[in-house]
Image 1 (cartoon, rainbow, N blue to C red):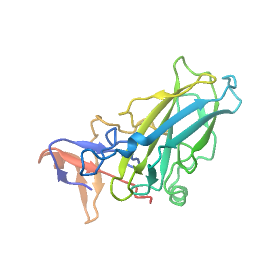
Image 2: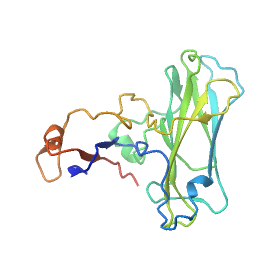
Image 3: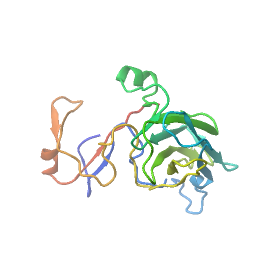
Image 4: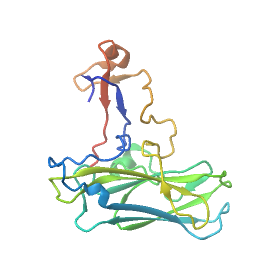
Length: 226
C-alpha cells in the first residue's frame, strides 16, 4: 500500500511481520479483557554437548499456552519461528531462497524461518568458527493468539537470545530488533528508508522522493502467504 500520508514515516520490512512495533495490542473493546499474549510462554535451551566447530548442535524451542489461550490463523497460519544466527553459525536444513521454492513453501525462507506445528521444536546447527564471547542465536516468535478466537485476536512477537554456551537457557531479547535470516542489510524499526522507485498496480512508477514532497508517508508491504 503506497501513498497514504501520515504524520510520521514508518517502514514495515518487505516479506516479514517482525517489523511491527513490539508487544501486541489487544483489540478487545473492553479495557479489562484478557490480553491473550500474556498466556504464551516462549523458551529455548541449548543442549549439553560441548561447543565446538564441526559437530551438529541442537537447541530446543518450546511454546506453552495457558489454559483458555490458543493460536489462531487471523493473520498467519500458526506460529512462525525466525532465526537470526551470528557469524560462524550455519543452520541445518535446505536453503529456500528462490521465488519458485518460496511460493511452494508458503513464502517461508527456510532454514531461517519455519512454521511451528508442535509445542516443542529442535533447531540444529553447526559452527564454522568458535563464537565470539557473548555471541547468541536470536530466536523470534510471531503469530496471533486469542482467548476468544475472532473476538480478541492479538498479534504476538517475542525475541529471545540464546547464548552459545553448552546447556544455556535463552534470555529475553530486544523487543524492537526485527532482524533475522541471512540478509543483515534489511531495514529495521527506526531506520531511514533509502530512495527508491517502484511500479504501481495502476501503471507507471512511484518515487519516494517525489511522494515525500507532499509530506511524510506510510509505506507497508506484505507477503500474504496465507
